[in-house]
Length: 373
Image (cartoon, rainbow, N blue to C red; front, side, top):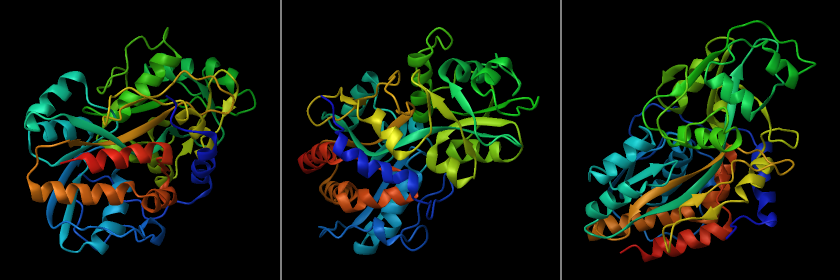
């Protein structure tokens, strides 16, 4: 079924008009217990919380780091001072590995579990299934820095060739054809990609494979199959591009904005589309559930040709045991996730460049959270 309805896109569209507030750095450090980070009052839920006590440890996605820092620091721990929520942003693959190995209580991931991971996770969860719960949605920017060029159009074929080093100069004829009025320099293109297993990489390469299959023949994958120079985490690639003219990368929109990078428009076959909350929402609206029951894994149509749809988007998940944690951990996990999924909390994420999960999905997320035992 389709989750996102047109009425919800108006909420998502507000993302593009709001400034970043308090985006943290992607430093792989553990989130402080309280104090620091963003203090945006709009992120604080007004809903009553059944606070848990103790410590909860999560690890994974760097894409959701700014969002989860906001939720923890500016919201949950302010209202629940006897709870400590730690999140270590090491990357989606690392987070799933640590979760399956029993080293953390939940994982953040930009990609749902693979079948073999789901099997291993069930063992970790004492014979019970682990669920993918979509908590934050957001677009992936093709972010670049090129002196004198702040308005750039790319399509899937040209993007795939750039990231495979088949196009190596900014004044290549293929780029000129998409940008006939731009003064493109002969500057060499410097590609940066995510090292390690990355859900952002999987979403970006899934887009390339779906939208430019004759150029990017490899299936979408968490490990990088193209060319370029690797950097760790979302902040790593964004900061590398920001360092000198000529660089390009794929990174979550919030990190592109945080590092003041230009973002390419994407021609999906129906004209050039600027990245905004509304244009990303038009693609997110095509997502369908591929998980069963309370496993809410989604599939996105990266090859959409809908006019005005920005096609490179991701949904970040919290991966949790449906059962299998001890009673105190379970209570704290349910308390934190309930706060995270609350509509007031979700609305506040717009302030830092994310799209809140619409109510059609958040209702299912809330049902799944309530079923954790």
